[in-house]
Image 1 (cartoon, each protein chain N blue to C red):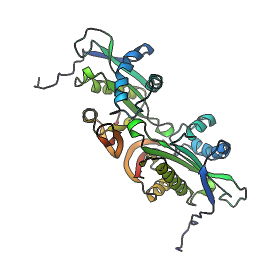
Image 2: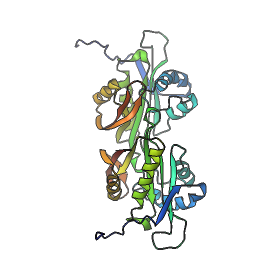
Image 3: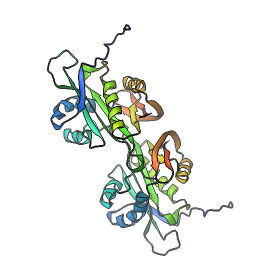
Image 4: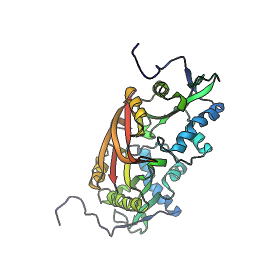
Length: 182
Length: 182
């Protein structure tokens, strides 16, 4: 084992599975602060809970999924939603073989490898559903942890759309288009 | 005047204006064959007329517009829809200052400069609505006339998403991400 300042991801800390309707309250607990902060998602900060649920739950060949576990802050409330993700076709018609995905992680779980675990799940699920590649359209340049995570999962930055995101505190920053084959 | 094999665009041949509900039959006459062909739009080829209308008509700050005129094949049926376009925010939240747009032109008008005229209208309309840039997410690489037209309108290719479009006869081709400031 190498010395590290961050805990190693533990495969025992969570299970990732397809989301059910009754997972929504736990999902929303994670999504709402991310949406309200407006720092990483290209969603209106005033998005309502109903709008968010409508966007987050995806039909096949897309999928919505959750990571459930004991909690990353040592809590013992088993079954708690620690993170969530969704995947869907990035375009219709001739573009429908390329998936797009989004993820969100409970702040207490940051730095534990959960975002990468959710990404890995989505890559497997997308492959199983017949997608041939995955593309992220809008990774906020200042979200350096996410950019590094997706690079470590095999994604390349194909473009930086200049000043395409108005960050609440940083002002205009770029949006990365990231891509990998499946 | 320089010698050319294509007619020069004539500003008298059409007027471009915001679309009204009663323009839909003329718009659909142009959109339907483009959607059914599946060669340039990233829309399901089986998209219904109702779905298409719901997607094509945009709320402010977006806009839907038409070019009307005498017809490019010498017809005298004034008021006929010769081309159409729409613009909308490419992303929500922090990305909502970047516009996206789409266009379609009656086949009889190909090569007359109408696509570029629609694009120019959308650039002005987007600027007037407060957008700061325009981005195309999915310009089919094999649609060389469109790629050349958008380049001539000041767009740069920021990325070529490899094999991201399954063309009905050419197979997998790239999708260009194109961009220009306003």
